[in-house]
View 1 (spheres, helix red, strand yellow):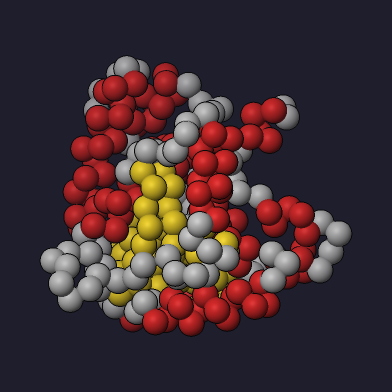
View 2: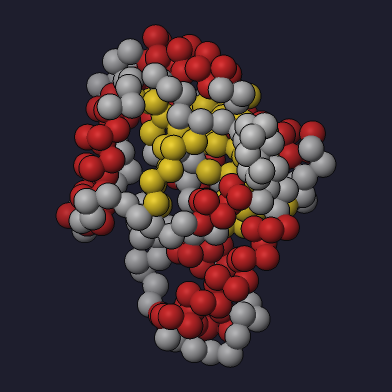
Length: 261
């Protein structure tokens, strides 16, 4: 974050050389409008979303729904938050404030099956509901845990695999990324991926760690034909110029939320 003025133009050039279309959003509204514009340009109506804190920050799902788009959360916790019209209470475990009985009632209300609070049953029902949604989606949206300036690759870290499903069938991939998510080199990821897994969930490495260079190449049979990266400021440059700049080093591991009540 000390050298964003150097790294942001460099990563833009690298992403573009990888076939990615790069957009810049000064505010949350600009970011929402950019996503909507990409969807409208493709005649898209249906989006599947992997978990991204930036989309929570700018309330993207609500914005898209107001404009007639379906924006479905595919992370299990975020999906439950969405059908309950609730807000996440934790970065890593968004439904830490709910129990399985409450979730079973929500699933029954939404027509996903008769009341059953067995966790395996709840998970299976969510999987069955979401699977056809992935296949029907026009656009897949993700965030990024990190972006390597050196290679222009975006790095996604999940434990459910929903981000891979979100990118498998849709023809367009949109990545919504805060400008502070850059790391200079690929080798820096060795430290940060290890730190993130251990701090967030006490794993040595998260279950799914993905490195995405760009849209599918001519030799690949499947994958997004278009990839868009939207870099979001939304007040970050003001923070960078203030005495609070250290908060931009946050890697969203949630360790602070586990320690501090």
